[in-house]
Length: 264
Image (cartoon, rainbow, N blue to C red; front, side):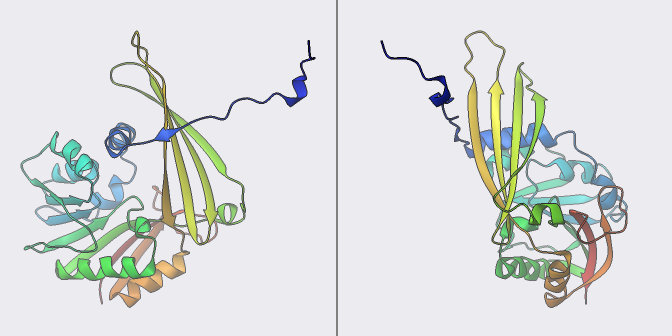
């Protein structure tokens, strides 16, 4: 009998199946439903009655919170799965539309347009970002305001090279069991690569564990580039802040940039 050489043994590679749009939306809604840290920035700058447009509204988290202040809110998203979840918690003063934020087709104008939670980073290229900002100007009232949150890479991320930053969170599933979310964050060619892995561990008898994943890409421009893009698109920055405590933004350190802008 041949000897067993333990040094050559290797754990089998983990297999993560592709995450469908429907399942991703469910996990997103579960993760973000109780998130309110960004609400102060928007509520302090939106007064009722006013008309608000949210680009990339997802499952309606911010729409519902802003509508509760008396604002009339329109939320658009390209994902029908997200919009389906949003309509399950419909409010009388919220309208949801399936629409591309680089090709707006709206008959009304708005006091405030918000692009929250790194949504603008998802457009990846300067061309598409400028196209979106040009569309925003077409739906502005004369004194309209643009409120947005951007992701800015810090020096730690830029210096990663081929390495990845690893984080994980654990969520309780409504029907029992847990979802373990692992995020592997890297940087390459001017983009942040976010690999999100979901390990579903149900407790119901006969339920099967699942390992699912998908990858997102974000434009990783410095703050100065975003300021340039806004100026070139006809916007003037009124205020900018870092983080959910709305502290002064420090380039190279801070990764969350809130901007309030209006038309030049």
